[in-house]
Image 1: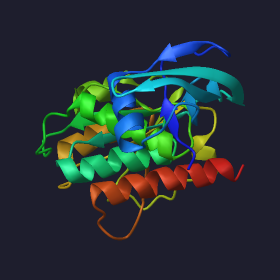
Image 2: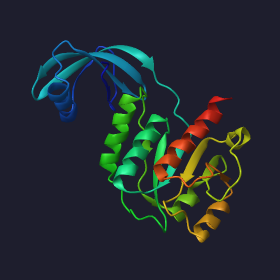
Image 3: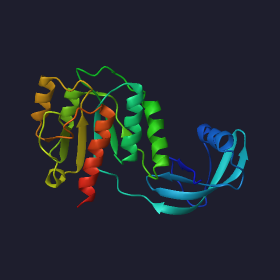
Length: 236
């Protein structure tokens, strides 16, 4: 089994590093590794094959042996999602990460029942999903923002892809061109209010599109929307 761990600090070949308490516990007590065991560490700059050179129950030191993967350009796809309850939100964080988004923006709208997100817990979920999905950079998680404030953040080079249950438009290749960032907007379980929907559609950066004839749960909508955007981008 190839163990991959996220190491946000700078990594230099042949340098050594003491691991965090969390990583130490994981390697010693969960994976039960020994001195001399190999594992990989990664961050936005790449991935390094590494070796444990010291290990006891509360201290692990590793040496970074060789760079085996170069860093990649970040995806320009982001997801803005109205907050939902804990379990579906966990799925959203995990699957959005696996599908390669660069940023997750939690939003509060009028029909959003959940008003807060545990950012520290969310970061752990996306880091773990990054480790498991063979990627290098966990998505950034923004602070919770109100919908009206979120809509003010779009410039001329950004595109807001609105998964609108009332739209009949299909997302096309030309809808994704000439934009530095693509942000997919997914509404709350009860959908946006008519006034909210009107304010979204008035935004100059918006492109409404349909995901399905059916009403989708938020977590299903997130997976479907990101997969659709990825498919269109990868087809060109």
